[in-house]
Length: 196
Image 1: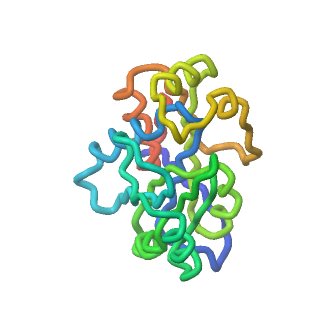
Image 2: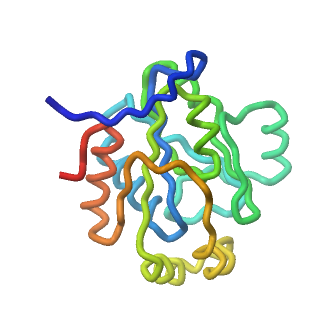
């Protein structure tokens, strides 16, 4: 028998029956790297979806995002085209409302999001799992310095930023090999226990 990890809000009007996996964590934790490896590992599974984020900053080579202007973003927001949206470090981010159709079809949607939207998403969706990817402060600082992305702003500011959030359902401390931690992420996405 396989142990599964599913967190449900219990709201009768919440969107389901599929699962929403929210991947969160500080800048420099390696979320995009692990997500790309997990996406490749799960490429044959058509029931697991990795939607592209809409962003108003320049996308880096390690991200699969749709870059739009602030005006385009605001117009789409006014037309209610986003299932969720947030602001971070002076930029806007969103996920298309098409993820709702995927979840209604029973699929699992996996997205890199801001921790600030967790409470609202736990209310809006029937089955939400929060996976936190993190690393010690010295590792985060080193990775941010190596990344040197102009939109990151001051490293000190990003490292000191804290956000109140409910405890994650799964935490991955990303200090080993990316391949090892990506396997942990894949098991968490599938709802399997990964920490054994």
